[in-house]
Image (cartoon, rainbow, N blue to C red; front, side, top):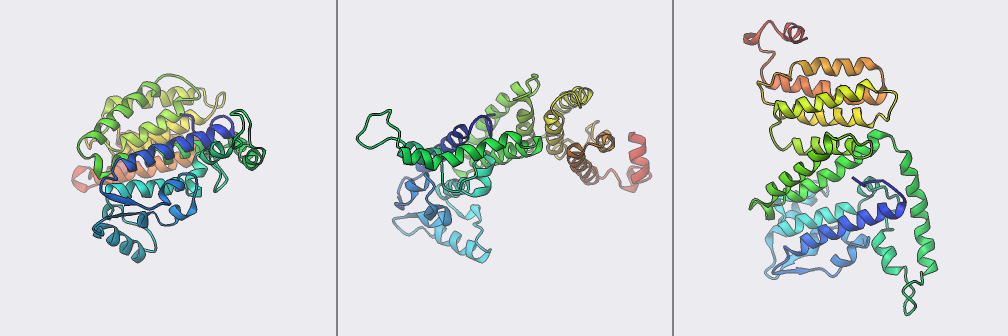
Amino acid sequence: MLLKAGPGIIHSTLHGIVMHVVHSLALSQCSGLIIDSTFSPSITGDELFAGNPVRQFTDGAGDEIIASAATAAAGSGGATDSSLLSPYAQLAQILADLNQPKMRFSFGLRSKTTSAVTFIASSYTRGGAASTLNPQALMEYKDELQSSASFAHDSPQEALSAVESIAQLFLRIMDNSAYTDGRSNSWRARWTTLVTSSTFVFNPAVQPRAFALLGKLASYDEVDDDLLYQTLATLRGALATFGDTDESLPISVLICLVSMVGNLPSDSSYLAPMFWLAIGILQIGNIPLYKVGLELLAKVLRALDNCGAFQPENGDGFEDFLMSAR
């Protein structure tokens, strides 16, 4: 909810918190493993770890899983198949991904190496008073703080895209094979409850982000018509005031709907009319809405086709089916 919000120090701090959480989760899986000495320094931005996280994790007997993963990565141009990695190494891969430029950009960071972790660690003069800042460390961090301020001018879709990227990373953590004992499901259920409590309560700062998150979470379970109805009701209210307020809310609701459509039951009463909803969004003529509306249109058509809606036995074909839904 705080992603890319506030000054640069908040961006770096949030990134550092997530790095430490993933680091702790990885260490909780390290029983019997030997950790390369570059693993811990990597959390402060060490490029050695980010370059090849797979090599950091071996066990005393020479774990063949790691070797297989490295071979598979070499054969696929460097991409590692996470299914070949141990739970420990999967989390290590996520830790490395967090330090990549694209992911750092999602947190509102531009620098490839500067992080809150390195800044805080080096910000106090050794042997001096606790309140004595190291001038050199402060100067090195100054560019990060200034460049991060420009993220306040991101378009709504760019900000929501960052929320989706981080949400997808968290879902990757929950899908880790170490948590197949039910913890991942309980975590997702708890997260969904927290998100839903914010989704349908008007709040210009939080509500758009909550909808973007709800869409990601909805892609894991079948969506019922009640949830879809509440989402459509929010979209109706957002479009009623469109032009007078920030466009983040209607865009976020549409992003959520794009994710929901693929998990609607085949007998949902909303699936066919969603085609005409997408057409209506396109006809508004707003470019940001048009982009998301086009995604929704494509997703609805694929969902209808997968349900067999355009088969001859279900009517007179594509045109007649959609016109009857209209």
